[in-house]
Length: 328
Image 1 (cartoon, helix red, strand yellow):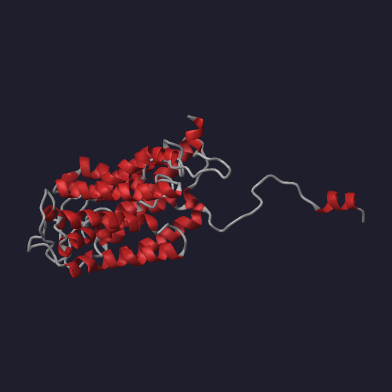
Image 2 (cartoon, rainbow, N blue to C red):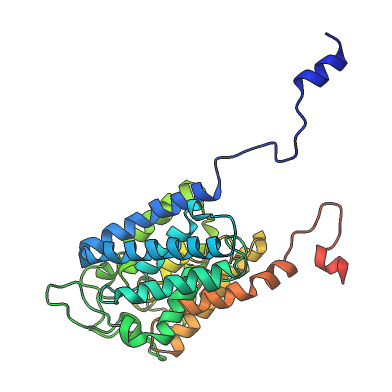
């Protein structure tokens, strides 16, 4: 067999890519869903089976809205990539157990239709859909979705720890649960998914081991909040750790600030993005006395991410300046 015959019969010419990996969007989203099962189990244990109903409504409505939009706009149906399911799951976990189911549906519609699909779908959304929906619900539907209750049989309304340590407060009042209770989620009201920090940390470890998220982002995010609140609280360990273990900080740092599409992409950009989230979260928490600093902080940094990447793009090998500096 001569060389010409070998080339024509045995070699196949095809366009790239020529290397394939199991790390598809669907596989990545499946890992995120598995990691979200840990706070889901903890939330169900503390608040009961209504948590499962909220998550089911969130997933079902998110997938349905994405399917309807893509069907009506004659676009490729992509619900099999599980990204809509992840969004719905996050929305269901981002509300208190007393939130009406219609608020979950409204949040899903906002996240999928306006934040995700209008810009072009997965990978093209400038803002994290679940975070945007969470903030929207908090701003426009506060009377219905901020009724914080303790996971007790008689469902007692309660203030969040952040309401007690915000608005320039430098000490932790006695009514705030202890650090161990905050860590485990014992007797703690709030959004169901953020209750048990232990469950969130297990999910974080899983995502890091599977190579889904960069540990630098949640670590720098939480560390920045810890440093600022420690300095502001006269280096009180109890004050600093109460901030770290209260609210959505660990949940947001693990599952929301690490979003591929809406976060910074460059190595230095990820550092600035995480630290920026931490600074904004700490400032909002110290100045105001309402929960929600994490959501606003992440959305602000989502909007700044393209500019951050532009100015912190890695220097191309053989060039003395970063790409955008050479263009200017």
